[in-house]
Amino acid sequence: MGDKVNQSHLVFGVATVSASRNSVNGDAYFIKEWSDCVLLALIDGLGHGKDAAEASALAKKYVAERFSSDVAEIMMGLHGHLSRTRGAVVGLARIDKTKQSLSFCGVGNIEVKVLSDPPMHPTSLEGIVGMNKIRLKKFEYRYIKLNALVLYSDGISSKFELPSNQASCRHPQEIAEEILSKWWNKWDDATVILAMEETQYH
Image (tube, rainbow, N blue to C red):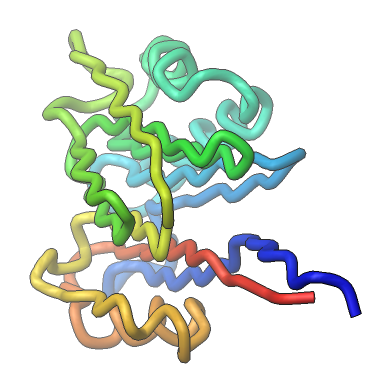
């Protein structure tokens, strides 16, 4: 037999729900894998209901058409693209598995948590994409090991924890659904995107 080769890939979990009393979800998400890269986008249209959903759908379409661009460039273009909507808060995370790098750009209350070696602490800046002026900051990191990355909208309490040992024994879909179930504020739209690195040996 040949030597064992460590090959890693990402697996995902997504859980989303609209605010109670609303039939339309104002949150949207987008996940795209290409080559050795992944883009994760989480969009929360301002407020709730139809207008929020229209803003987030327009933003999602824009991101999907430009997924391979730099995250800060996508965000800046999106700011102008949403100028005739009520606006949205947005988080964009790009993972390059070949370079073992993560870049993140967020505006508004889209939160992010990362379990990695070494630790990473990206954050979103205040503002609303599509309204007034916004400040952009792209956080860039190199990692040795990326265990998990979580993006979540403000309908989820930030008090949840994601122990690193969960990554080896539970599928991210199960964990995302558990986070939503336990930490959802039922008066707001809520979305959780969870990406985990899974290692296989051949």
